Each structure stands twice: as structure tokens, then as C-alpha cells.
Amino acid sequence: MGRMQKTPNPDSGTAALDTAACNCLAIRQAARQVTQLYDRYMAATGLSASQYSILAKLARLGPLSINALSAAMVMDRTTTGRAVRPLERDRLVAIDAGDDDARTRLVRLTPAGAKRLKAAAAHWQEAQREFERGYGVAEAADLRATLARVVAAGR
Image 1 (tube, rainbow, N blue to C red):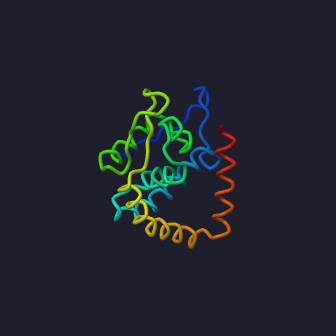
Image 2: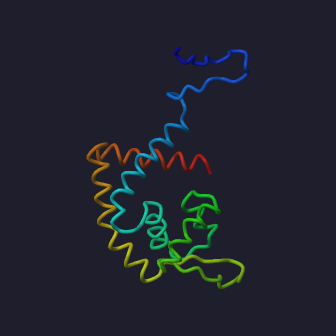
Image 3: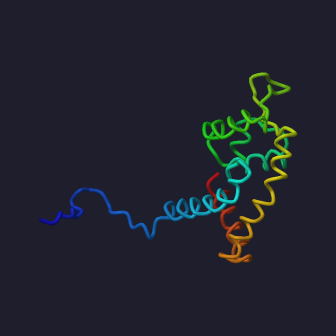
């Protein structure tokens, strides 16, 4: 005997999700796909794409509080804290008390972190090139500009 498939009840009060029209789902799927691509290239460095991005952000901006790093990464504070812990454990970042307020914790790139970041840059660039080979160089630039507008709209 075959299994019966449930059909949605139109009177249930819930609307069916049209996944083809869901912005959130489309963006999350694309983000997961791109993250997987970068993670494959970054695996040899011992860094995830997220960890590399944190190190690169600290290299560009200098020491940041967890809150400022979270804002710069567009991550919630708890997620940022969890992402920073293995970097601190591996001595790629250090977390120190702030100069003005000892309660503020500043995350800074260590010399070992700068060295790992530099060594990982070639892998990151190769991931960039692969993405652009498949998607298009101009299209990737347009996508980054569009996504920057999405981020700005959400703030």
C-alpha cells in the first residue's frame, strides 16, 4: 500500500511558502553555497571563511571591541564571541581590556594571526577567482554592490 501525501489545508490559517519568491531563503541558500566554496579553499589553511574574514577585518580596522567587531561583521554578539574563541585559543587574536574601560574587551590581531592571514590570502584569492569564473567578474562586482545595499538597508 502506498503512502498518502498530506495536502495543505486551505482553512488552516497558514499560507504556503512560495520558496521561489522568498528573498530570505534565496539569500541564505546563496550564502551557504558561496561559504562552502570558500571553506573548501580555506581548509588547507586551518581557517574557515568566517575566521579568515574576522582576521582580515581586524587587519584593516585594528583592535575592536566585540560589539564593534560584531557590527562590522554583521553578526550578533554571541556568534562573534563563539567565532573568536578558537582564534584566541590558537593565538591568532588576543582579547585585552580596553584602555578607557576595563570592562570593554578589545580583540586584536596578533603577529601569528597576521602571519596566518598573509599565508591564507592566496587560498582566498583562488576561491575569489573560482567564484568569478563561474559567476562573472563584472557580475560579482555588481553582486557585491547589491549586497552592500542589502546590508545598509537592514541597519
